[in-house]
Amino acid sequence: MKSRLREIDLYAPLEKFLTEHGYIVHAEVVLSDISATKEGVLLVVEVKLRFNLDVILQAIERQRAADAVYIAIPIHNFRRHPRRWKAIRSLCSRLGIGILFVRFVEGRAPEVEVALHRRDVSKGNSKAKLLFLKEIEGRGTNRNIGGSSRVPLYTAYRKEALRIAQCLVEHGPLSPQQLRALGCVPSTGSILLKNYYGWFERISRGVYQLNEKGKKALEAYQAASSR
Image 1 (cartoon, helix red, strand yellow):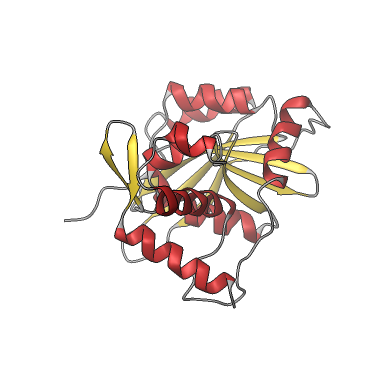
Image 2 (spheres, helix red, strand yellow):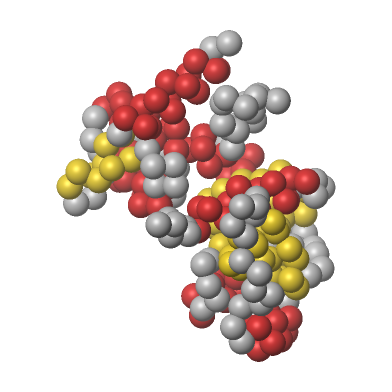
């Protein structure tokens, strides 16, 4: 039986697509799903499994900071468009929101298609945009290992997850509030809840611990960083 598609399954193809277009990609910046920067331009992508009012409202909110905002959704097999596509495209066009399709066809690597282009509209140095850029800048250097196929890419989002993992190893099971008190990012609760990498497990209400998969991932990065 095929596993159910999750929002995180869209991240890798979107990251690859944006990187190929010259963007530096970051996850979970100021609670946005994906933020990408290039030559002073801030692009935000909100990822959902289907169109709904929530993602439209999220995209409108992101327009306060971003130079361009897109919504990304999956398209399965050889289907051309989601239901009510004409109405969706018309609405997003009026609102100035772009649309990305992540096409999943069995036996093929996912592909990203720009279904509705969104031209960049500079926000200058608005307070909301600076908040995004400040968080991105504060995430430290990129420790990716070029050409490595054995060590996963060290993305900004992964860096935050590893920081949480390290705290759980050192201090044992903790709540998001306790982890934030130890210096973890404001989005710690979201990272634990979504558990994109499968590293964390909830052992009681609001309390998490690191599982064996998470311990192995932490050990792998510690070994890579010591080289």
